[in-house]
Image 1: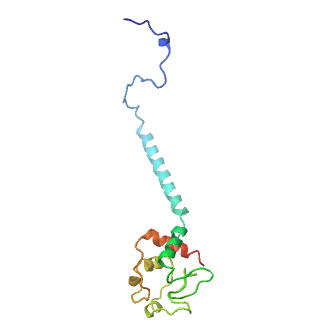
Image 2: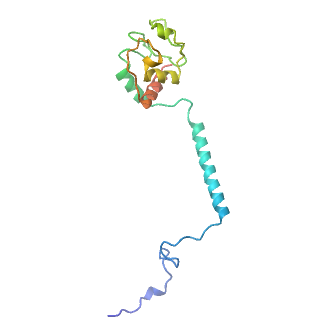
Image 3: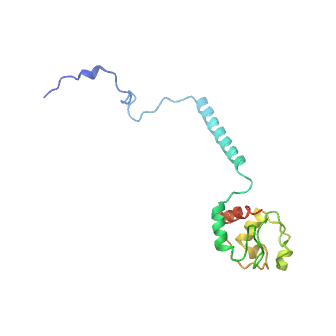
Length: 164
């Protein structure tokens, strides 16, 4: 059985039809100078993006304040307090901790080791102390194993920074 020729066979091929190059054929090669310029442009834009993100990042690694609040409530609040009504108790209150000299509150009796530590609290010293109090200040009164997760430490520090 033969069929008559199709009436639309004289139409040009559809834009998605296979071309003379065939399936899997390579596109014509670009000149080597074009490739060099394209690579340089990609490298420059990547370097620019990296530089912009570096300058846009705050100096202090920002933690999640809400996660820090929950962590403080579960791991720190039994001994320490923060906020407008904070007072030293079993542990010192932690308001205004950033840039404060260790063992500087008059309403708490610090260990001799803490008084002699010479520490001024900043993000780096706080992170080290929170991670391992006994290693950072041998002889400290703080009986706490520490928090080894850097993200949790950053969250806790971000929360403490809200109490100036």
